[in-house]
Image (cartoon, rainbow, N blue to C red; front, side, top):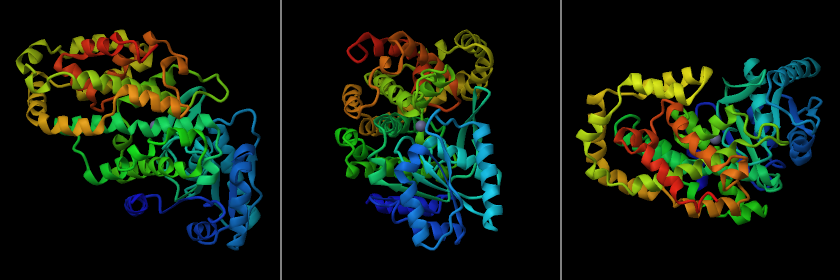
Length: 452
Ligand SMILES: [Zn+2]
């Protein structure tokens, strides 16, 4: 079934044209490379670790398919390769040098995980060139996405690029990836649970209708893919099929949808806020995206539990509207919550989803009317936070705030920031609009069995 869904996603995605996920896929990718590049010679870009993981298989496959290979660009394994503008420029230069050496335009092939993919994605994009990625770790869902997060002078920006033309994942290779990368992919895929619930709520109040086709692409395999944390941690190749499919589908769904809503909700804002605080940035390797998302996901599942315990159908809309704060007060609170440029950002983002009293009444009435159906849909979507925490720990992923260097107070303090961080409507907004926000956050931390 997942094969059909993947084929549908590739058909409907506007940038990625071919995806191969299988055991031995790197050994077998010659014909795909030939077709994708229309016979162009290849430039493989890797680092010493990722080259060792899949470089020889990819090169042999290309040669067997009759393709020429420019001299590979292999970064040293140490120091850790960063997704920086400088490294992207070096790859761009290597591509043009390879063009000259081969006498025609080469097809860049990133052999690696997130960082290498982002760097080659950006270098190729700047040259107006397509590229292929042979993924070496199931570490996040950005392989098939169009954005490339790049840092410049210590500031992280997401460059809008073009997604890879083809994606290859060899399950035998991904099963051998370092445990922290597998844990990261597990966390990033798990985000689809609360992220999907946020979309259900945004749909219920008429803010962002669910695209059922895209929903199916991104959500169908998530539960099954997350159901084998032990096997993933043990590096069993078969268990990786669901995880890799899920991550690839998530990126493709963003292409089909033309935005990131299908793949992320409030749990990602926790991660982004910690990223901006440089949480774990000086570790080697730096704290991964998925590690932060895992803890954000746990926090959101805990929040959802408290939210679902409320009687939405009995919500007193008049009281909520009467207690609704005017924009000036909200803005003042945002400026107390954030400092500097982030405060300006949060003011702008929150303003975009702020409504006056009449607008609030309308939203809350819609929520109440639709609640029987919405509640059923949310119950089907969500999983208990404690069960999920257990799964995270079996997968070797962070399962408590201290696993990513945060204390419980730090996690709690991220809740108001996450609510203000983006204009995207999530359960945090529903709770704020219903007048329940502070109480629900207190309830999340009242029972400390999840956090200690
Ligand atoms: Zn993510």
